[in-house]
Image (cartoon, rainbow, N blue to C red):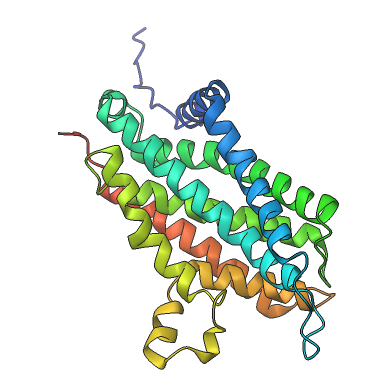
Length: 263
């Protein structure tokens, strides 16, 4: 009796993705300065902002304290900035050290690689958002009409968007210094146009149009909805979905532009 051997097809597993995620998390855990920057810096900057506005008189036409109005927006802006910078530099370090090129010679797919990086840094982003919000609401007296839990969620999603854009920006940099140079190109315009300095509706038409295609604008709008509305609003959910959509698109573009050779 003849036995016919049927080729066994390899079933895709989550093992490469999980291994990449675990490796990046271990690297982050052992890098104490990076952990301090992720967890401590946003909280310290929020404390600095509190003392800046502590003795500022309240506008009679707008009884909401300035710290409450500005601070809740900064809870979305600061995680976005920090995670963009750290992710872009960390990814570029993987390129220049040759680690990324070695990984891409293995069966590890680009999607597994970027998903692993994104998940690991998203865990760090979630911790960062939780600490910053805990300090702001618990110690600094930040107040909002809506639930602080929604502020944490929005800040976390915005930080994940910063991670995704950092991964994308690193694809166009040759050195860590070049990765840092993307900060004023990618991040600074979003800070100017997100509504923090001037309400977006008061911007010139062409600047408002530009702000409408920037994720930070929607994160700030979502946070302002939480600040002024005790219940969840449809606009807040829509803005949050837009920020998440930006993050997904940036990750997909990062996978498409990921080079197999770092030279």
